[in-house]
Length: 288
Image (cartoon, rainbow, N blue to C red; front, side, top):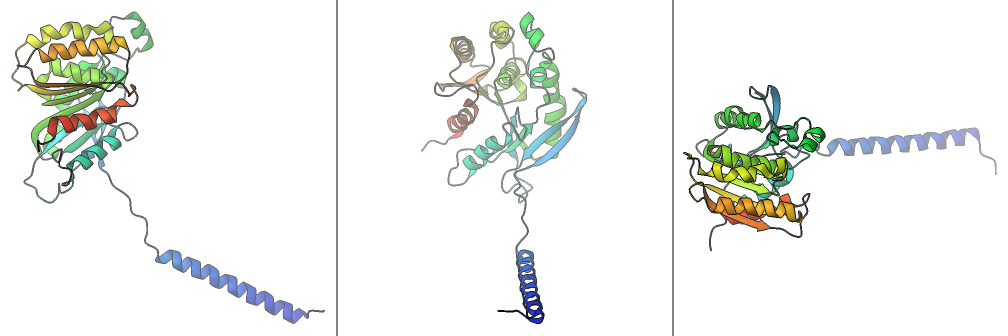
């Protein structure tokens, strides 16, 4: 059968017309769809630290209803290793969940995630261990980081946000070592300490050795609430951690409450989430 050029041309034009309608229809449908909106968990502040001589990034979570009542003040949770790709997101998830009215374990709280720059530098005091000095040459500046917390960070947070004076610090591993050092040397900085698998092996466990003398020093701070968790870390970590817990438990003038919870099924890498959940539940859950 022969096809005339006119018929072929007509069919081609019809096909093009139909395709054009389809394209226009698809474009119209897409234009009618709502544009995606960002899912906002918090916001970022940047502060210039005088004590560290550098800019520090803070990831900030404000509780639901924060903007509604300007008279309400909130506790603050300071999170070490608080970068978005570290522990900020999953810890904020716990805080939000445990403050839901139908859960009602934790008071609504502000979370300040301190983004990491050099955790080995910031979270360790000087060591005399030659191998550690060689392997980790930037370490030993925890005193400066402590001054940053006291003189730069906390004044900024208290000036910028509505806080009620209740301050918690969360630290794991070297962050746990630092939180323990703060408890012993600067107990006025925080009311509550959540410490997971602290690296008390640092400097051949010298912080454990110094603890009895440090705990005897007088302090104007109210006795702290301390929660210590330990994963399956081996006998040396277990011995150092349990030794420190025993010293804290024997000093009620400095430590009003001490809870120690082993997590033998967790590793150094996996312990923090479960430890913080258990800490919040232990320290804050209301009796039925």
